[in-house]
Image (tube, rainbow, N blue to C red; front, side):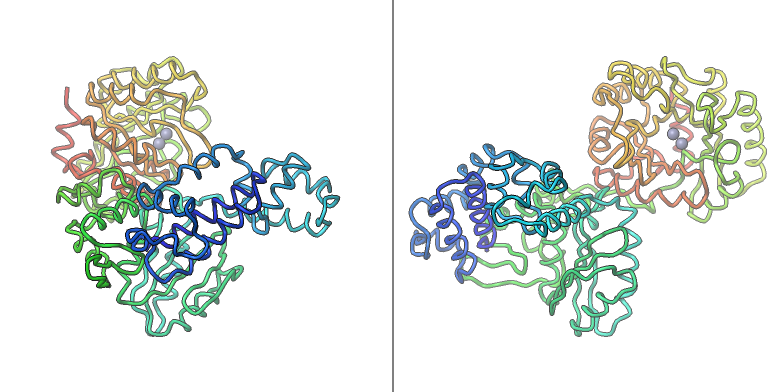
Length: 572
Ligand SMILES: [Zn+2]
Ligand SMILES: [Zn+2]
């Protein structure tokens, strides 16, 4: 049923009208219609098809037309129009708790406030208390609401969310009567950042589950608690929602709460084409109104004649069509990874010896690793002089002679200097098994120059992989100004691999670029870039990115067995 969707759109439309200080009657009319549809027992789409929208209390001709437009096209033109006329900051102010459109319209008119920053400044300067129906307490509440909003609107990196989810699940899994429990949302889709964490569960003792959830030691504040739903704030200001679901609907609810929104919109349309209406709780046959319940998510997709879509690619970028045609990719799996081609050691600024790294690699089930320390121009961190690199190559060769089961490759992470030349001679690079090239200095150069530096490294025959190609650090540093299309084109032409740096702050290339690279035949190398043995397990974050980028085993350099890899490395 789209009742909730439709009523939300009408509410929003009334808010926008009110923000624009439009005719009061019009505002009230939309609110009234929104309320009626919210509490409507029948399916609004059904009512619309019967031509009976105007029988709904509060729905006149104009509003009926808008509802029909929404159901037909998914949009309301009047809504888009008014949204485009409203200053962006004003709609953002609506997200602050306690701020209604009427107050915002007044603040806009009297103090010319158009953004959260304006509002904060006015409250701090005590300009708000002089307005009608306002006072010192309103200023204090406004500042509190702003603070909470800012806390909530920052998405947290996946690697921060992960230990929280692990802890919640392991605590709740011990409880009696628990059935299923999973984290949904962007967490399940393994997006690089996560908003709130949504946990879905089934339980024979919902009350126990809710109270155990609210009493977890990590909980800092309980925002809400009901019979089947609770919301808490845990460490790092992360919001965690728990929802208890009826077992028979678990599959449908999990599908719904995994998203993405775009994926779900498309999926509902597929369902409609096949004669069903898909809701959060069930799939309803339109011809006889029969409701179908699915305890398992696979069954929801199967009921629509689709293959089960891995959560990582549910972004409406072709996965629904592929699942209908039964041609989904067989996504890369962590266990397909055979080695790690970018690891730092105590030869330079790494904290683990080659020996420790090798032992960890064996534990991870790898066949090979490449020790790639920095080159000299990186400066402070003590990159290897050419002489030391020669020495390292000899030492590693000797180690390999006596070692069973795993091959250690000599490598380097050679710096691409500001002028585009590499930090070692071609002769020395030719002696390395693996050459990873990357840019650490002069990152502020103009687009043309950065692009040129990367392309000249790609064109050097000794270079195998370009590491962290965009230089971004999630939440801290934007990518270099560069022409990625030109860089990828050069990599494709020269047979150079691109890295998916698996360091959880980098994830560089990201999912979209990785997919583009795959599309033009570039091999991707997923590397931990670990500076100590314990960080080699970051590989899985790189695999997440690869999966989100639709990568299969055959697209990934370090999913090759050793012999195949050696052949690739000696390519001309
Ligand atoms: Zn680096
Ligand atoms: Zn590195």
